[in-house]
Amino acid sequence: MNIKRIKNAAGRQSPNGYTGSPDDSHETRVVVGWSGRARLIATLLISLHLLAVVAEPLRFFSRSPENFAAADTAFLRRTLGPYVDAMYLSHGYFFFAPNPGPAHLVECQVTPDRELASGSNPEADKSKWKIYPDRKDQWPRLLYHRHFMLSEFYNTLFAPTELENVTESDQRIAQRITDQWREDRRIYESLQDCVKQNLISKYPEHSVALKRIQHELPNPRTIFVDRWKLTDPRLYNELLEGPVKEPSNGQSPKQMPSETKFPAAFDTPANVEQIVPQKQFDGDAKILDENKEQIKEPRVVPSEIVPSEIVPSGNRGAR
Amino acid sequence: MIGKEFSKCWNSFWFEPSAATTLAMIRIATGAMLAYIHIVWCLRLDDFLGPNAFTTGEFAQSLHRGDFAWSYLWYIDSVPLLWAHQLVAIALSILMAIGLFTRFVIPIIWFMTLMVCHRMTGLLFGLDQIVMMVTMYLMVARSGDEISMDRYLDLGKAQASPGLNANIQTSNWSTYNTIAARLMQIHLCVIYLFGGLGKMRGETWWDGSAIWLSAVSYEYQSLDLTWIGNYPVLMALAAHVTLFWETFYVCLVWPKMTRPWVLATAFGVHAGIGVFLGMITFGWMMIVANAVFIEPTTMKRWLDFLNVKATTSR
Image 1 (cartoon, each protein chain N blue to C red):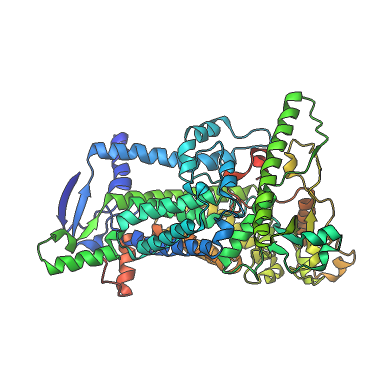
Image 2 (image 1 turned 180 degrees about the horizontal axis):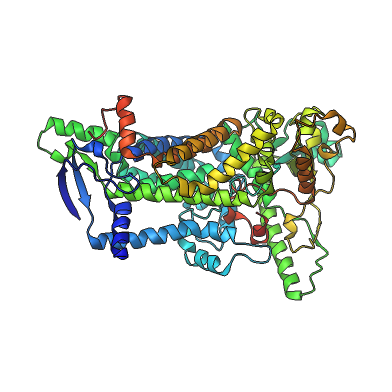
């Protein structure tokens, strides 16, 4: 390295002005220059690092329901895998993309074992029940957000209790679907056990049941005309754990809605059209349609919630 | 000829030494945020890292089976040890913020936080990605050369024994600063590019309803934004500005003419996310990361204006 002392090094400015400035003419500064060999080595390292930075988003972006990723991006990701994973660079960066979706909560029903044994109504005492996330219980906001991420993660890992109607004629693909479901289910159950164990450690001699809740996103009409609050109970739908029919479009079973009930939020009364001032809701019909579509094919979880690396491969096509 | 010109530009872009002023400010904000992040993990240490955590070490390990992520925290169940780990992390984050032993402290706190990230898979979000990204590049930089205790102590030493180190009195421009800043800038461009391209795939960003859907997401909401539903044009405009700004950030942030506008939009978007969508930490860190596009000389002028002179390089 070449170290030199520069006086009045004015006017040295890089193309975008980041380095050097005419204002520094009165300064004495120590400039540490790099030799050609050092620059060459640095160039190689920088190039490799930048390839690693784009490897995961490229792979993530080039995936499709049929393919894990395009061949070139999969190769890049695989080759740089050790570095990408170890350095925590495995992110798709799909913040709130492609569409903002409904939030997911986890309701934990904590019931004394003796109550269950006696057959009394466990709904009677909800004082020990927990909901994740819960603004009242989890403060400051970052703590709340960690619990929110947990509930979204729990929902993302969901795999149904059994797989029904694998209609795929190719035996190998059918087997792969079944194997994938089995692995997804194992991971989901592991997380379930962890969350239950966490609560049982706080409430010994209790049993814990977990429920997934989807908080639907209402349309403007529901808020402004029907006067629903965002916390209206009708916006919360329990998602079922049961079997899910295999999708016909090649999607992973995990992408299918686990709740068939059409949320009341979108069951807008027929006379609403007459009540709603048209100028206020120019885009409303579209939003309503969007939300209906969302029920058929739920909006996906924003990627900032769930880093791509932890989504089991069966669900990779979902986002 | 073209090769020579390219080589000249490349060298100028990556290897021309620069001052650490901007990176020092980023270091302060990031160190403080790291301390806060680790403090929040401590608020429910048992739930997050303990033997009965929401996601146990064994579970986290099983999620990473087949990849190359690793964390020693997968194997630690002892609560006192976990407390010790977190307290050290908080102390090092504070040292990073105040700039004491910066060259040693930043790599250690980066590594400790990395271990927490690999341990806490599933409970992380954009904040963790951005903080880790910024800290990683600060490891390369000499951000402790300015606005730091290191600098303050060096100046003190130099005043006590004139001639001990004449260089201390001068500003140390370093290629490491330039490389760190460039990497951070490009990484930020990658984040925005893919964020924008991802939104391009979503129809709600095109029909303008994405802003409404974000506004009525109660779990995110920190301030009521549903009033925006009364202004469809405003909603659609906000969605489209976000869409195009994010996608074209990679091109528009470099020319001097468009940079202030792009950075001002970044400030507006992330402040909005912070204030209305309850992600004040994430919004703040994105603003901090965007500051890397502020030239060190400009940052120094601002600091001079604010009379923060004591430990800057002049």
